[in-house]
Figure (cartoon, rainbow, N blue to C red):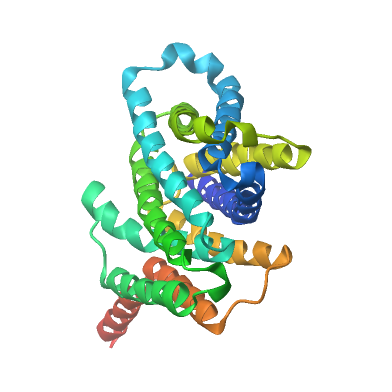
Length: 314
């Protein structure tokens, strides 16, 4: 087996591992948001998560500090701003909707990646990608509109919209990682990316959350271990796995594997004792997952190639 093929397989294994971790993180983050400071410290939790992760990653790049230049720092900061926007809208959305809906609506980035690759990487989408986009939108309608949880109140739609919007920023991140990681050191890129997210989250929490709800800040063991889990596994390990994998795995393949994040999100929510979801939500999940598979496998092109091959043979 060639070295390139081995690295591609390793990359896919790492992406799948990161997907499982991210799927579990929806439940952990949702619980932390609800219990810490009466739900008033969304960005403080994110700030602590990314600051801890930044410290850990710093020790991985400390030997490379002399080789860092303005170009790689700027690219890392761009990735960090995109990731900050993704986490901001995703985490705010999680306050208003369920972890399962949040995770599935988020992974609509799988359908968006081909179109953004067209704009950024000049890779034109195929007919299957347009079909996948339509199925994805239909799935979102089932999840967010028909699958509305009446017990969640009148604000659940806010969480659904924010969760879906998050998919756009994650799609941008996947595309730009593919663009930058091909020529830059992935660990250094990751350091500046995570540092940027930590700084931006700290600015928001120090200016908006802490001044208003300072007296409600209270740490216990449960909150600490959840922040550590999010920092070490859902940030350091998962982000490094993605950065490494995208050197060797095509962005569309990465998006398909990451789309399983929604499946694992549902599984972990059910394991945690969540109520059985309505049939509309399950239909929506199936449509979104089908759209992601169609967008990646591209059955239309495969059928055309098979037809042309049979025609030439005859």
